[in-house]
Image (cartoon, rainbow, N blue to C red; front, side, top):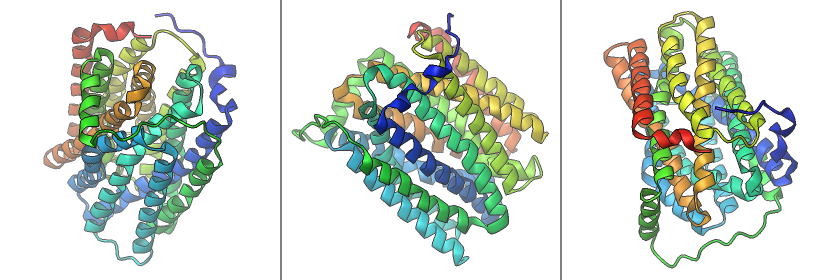
Length: 409
């Protein structure tokens, strides 16, 4: 595999486009707040119930609307103005964060509140994700799309690196209300950025058919496109076996590492820093041609490092192994996203990216439910170790059954 040397001069080339710059920094602020809330919500859930299974239930509640509504969100993303959709979803998630802030400040949070609010947050995400994934294409020319997607991933994972660490510290000193309140405020920068953009008018389709018909047409397109079909399958399975362990980190930080909310923030941040630097590596490589081979390398390496994480009880080693897990996990997702967006027809972009979002986000709650249930019956370490075995097995299956993946560029 010939991979060019990283070139820092081209690493941030997409930021020369004003619209993408507004999007990048607005989303970065918002996502830092989101990860602060996610960390606080996970630790609050465990404090209220002391149940690993309940952590899985909260993750499942947040993700199940994705399974139900994301495909509809993809149809609307193809039909309507994506900026308007994104503004509406940001306001919705801000309102949910404010409700969590009020309940926490009044010290009246019940476990069922977390389930219900997670469901509503998941509904907003189901419409937000397809529009957000497709929206990047409107912010940069096609030749800069791979770099923009890599920077988008870097931005997401930079927030993952910073948000949990801040959230863990704020939770330890001030409690969950501060974390939820700051998340509510963090939606303002991205809403302001969306209004400040100067966008070209997009040729959105008129609704000449039903949403169900458009969904069926989108499925037919995917089913007959072997590259997109295979990449979506890889993303779906990878997220089930490679992200389910995240729901266990609140319990892991207490029962395995004998820590607290700060420990949880450190674990989340180490994973995020690794993923952020992995995405930066991809951006620095520029327009390299061996994307499929790099994807296959990631499929083998992320379960390897996750396996090492599952068998250690040292905080230092846990940080190192989660860092490397995050690095190679984002390589798999970013290469898959880039290859899908490079091959999809613009008329189907919203619907294909809704299925991508379903594979990306909708499979995580299934993994959370499985990992949480296995951990409840056995141990957290056994649950994660079992997931790494499935990850290795899946990588071997892809190597044998889908050999053309290695040739994609």
